[in-house]
Structure formats: structure tokens, C-alpha cells
Length: 247
Length: 245
Image (tube, rainbow over all chains, first blue to last red; front, top):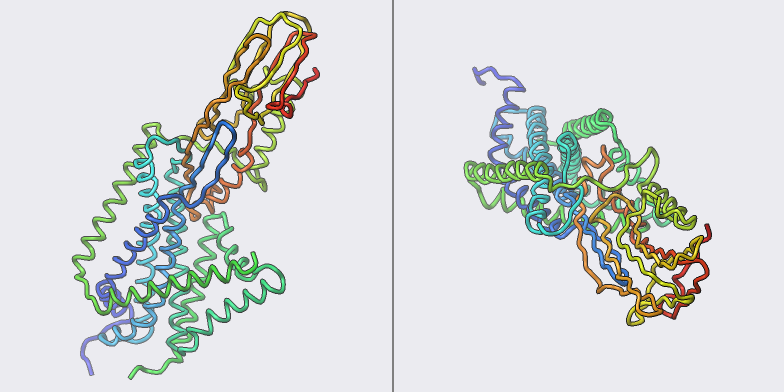
């Protein structure tokens, strides 16, 4: 029995602060991943060319897409690992599953913000490095209006949050049963394979991806991601209620 | 599409698993000082912010060029706009209006006095020429051969480099001296897919709009006196087009 009164938000806040410290290593892996993306993007993400009897012209397309994609993989892994390991850490505190989830969600939100901002700015660093390294060559489309850049950061944060919530949900399913580690990718890839084999197209995943990727309205994109993330976290909380107490 | 997506997913999953293994090393076995991590992160953030300042300084100094790819209309690809420009250019060419047409850039100009009745047109060193040589007969016999070298104007500047030939008159031969092949390299910056989602300026949007330009659209336009007979040799025999006004 304790004489100290506490509340779920207060405990969740303490857990969140604790997690930002013990998972600080995640930031280092984020930097390493983004630098790897930068390295891979430095020689271009695409080429086209033309040759005639008088001219050979190569066009190299530079974009930060690889940096963003690698950052999203990082976000997925962070979500997955958090679901697997955070409950071990949470027993340090007098807590319940709800406070643990709240602190995890806050941690994922923080990670998504850091990942989204650094991934988008990593694309800017890439542009500067390319211009400085190949200063004599002609280049086009370098300038990004600040509003477009802000829009890119906004979208990158939301994508990172969406993907990390997906990783968290997958991690929680794996905590329920180890079979999910094989079942989920197996079902997903198997369904895509069967669909591609029978219809020639993998519409299932394409439609799911296009639902987010082809949304050109800032507001609707936010709403779609917000609802998907809320659904993901609600499923996590629902599934975790069925979990047994760790011995 | 076929199996591309499942294979791609598998590779992504593999990368994710490898990174997960890496995470365990960082967060499990190897403990990192919280302070040291924030120092490293702080340096990285400072680098990113400094690059942002340099980036906008580069843009302000005029080194940044505007995007030459025509803006898309609703439901259009960039190539539709190129189609329109190229179609207007060739229309002007075959109607003999290239001289007045605003969308044609003059790349070379040569004038020769030539009072003879026959002229052989060929390339120097018999190198094959695959561009268009348009020949227009003037309304009068003024004893002058005018040669102009045009390229379509897509507003891209260095994005569409041209290496024009030299045209010389030697006796009864008009010789097209093709230059040595020049190499050009252009960097085309595309927005990340995260911002391209709202602006339509990503790799897929830009590169698909550029492919159609990857062909020769240069024209050597000859205006010759009325009644002048043009001969060709094997180097250009498939390139000559006669323009009727």
C-alpha cells in the first residue's frame, strides 16, 4: 500500500521521459540510416540519357526519396521494438498497460517528428552537397519554395507516425503469439503473390498505398493518417488487454 | 508489375530485420550515454540547419534555376505539353514558317553567294547525318544560299544542349562539318515524394515528362535560289526534305 497518490497521465509522462533516455540509441541508428540514404542518393536515384552524332547528354535525377524511405523503415523498426521491449522497462514503475501505451504513443510521436524533420532536411543537405561537389555542371529544379518544404516535412512526419504505428501493432501481435512473426508477412506476401498471379496486378497493396500517397490535400491526408493511426493504437490496446502478465 | 511488389517487399523486410538486429546492439548490449547521444544528434541537427541556410543562400545567389518542365494541366502528364510544343514546331517547319516561329531557337547562320545552277550538299568526311535538312526554293533567283540551324525551344536552356555543325561552301559543294561529339551532364533535382504528393514535382512526375525530348529536333534549313538543282550523297540522302510554301 502506498500513501502517494498518482494518476495515469503523470505515470505515463514519467515513463515517456524514462524511455527517451533508455532508447536514446535509436537516434544514433536514425542518423546512421539517414547518412546511408544520403550516400545511396548522392549518385542519383535515376538516369536518362540521349546520344546523337554530336551530343551525348546524361540527366541525373537527384531526390531525397531514399533518405525518406530508409527513415520510414527505421520508424517501423522503432515501433516494432518498442512493442517488444517497453513492457519490460515499464515494470520499473508502478503502472498499468494504459500508461505504458500512452508513453509509447508519445515516444513514437516524438520519434516521428524527429524522423520527419531530419529526413526532409537530409534531402536539403543532399542538394547542397551535390551542387558543391558538381559545381560546374548545369542543374535544374534546385530551389524548393519554403512552403513546399514545410509541406514535405509535414507529410514525412505523418508517414513516419503511420509506419511506426504499423510497426507497433505488428510488434504487439508478435507479443501475443510468436506465430504472427511468420503469419503476417506470409499472409501479406502470399495474398499479393496470388493476386498478382491470377489478375496480373497486386491491387490490394497498391490501393492501400494509393489511399495515402495519392491524397493531394493536406487536410484530407492528415485526417486519413490520423484515423489510421488511431485505429492502429486502438487495436494495440484491445489486443494487449488479452495478454497475460509477464512472469 | 507481376512479382515485382512481393520481391520488393521481401527485400524491405530483410532490411528491416537487419536494422532490428542492429538496434538490439545499440539499445541492449551496448549502452550509450544519453548526453553523448544528444551531443551527436545536436551536431547532426546543426549540420542540417546550416545546409538549409546554404541552400537558400544558393537559391538567392541565382544559382538555382527554375524548373523548365512545363506545368501540368489537370489530368495531364508533362509529355502532353511537350507534344503540343513539338507539334507546333514541326508544323511551322513544314509550312516554311520556322523563321518567324517564336518557338524555334536560331543556333547558327551562314550566307553564301552562289550563282551556279547545281549544288552538292554533303557532310565533311562522309559522316552520316541523321538530322533534318529542309530545303526551300525561294521565289526568285537572287544568287544566294542561306543556311540556318534551328532547335526547338522548350525553355530549358542547358537542359537541352545543342552542338551545332559548321556549314561551308567549297566550290560547288555545300559541306556540313559535324562537330566532335560533346558530352553534357545535367542534374535534375526532384522533390521528395513526401512534398511531391502535394506539388507533383517528384522523380516520377519529372522524368516521365522529359523522355520525349530525348531525340534530335534540330533542323538545318536551306533557302536556295529558284531553279537551283540540289544533289546529295549517301551521307545525307535520307535527311533532305523539300518544303513547299
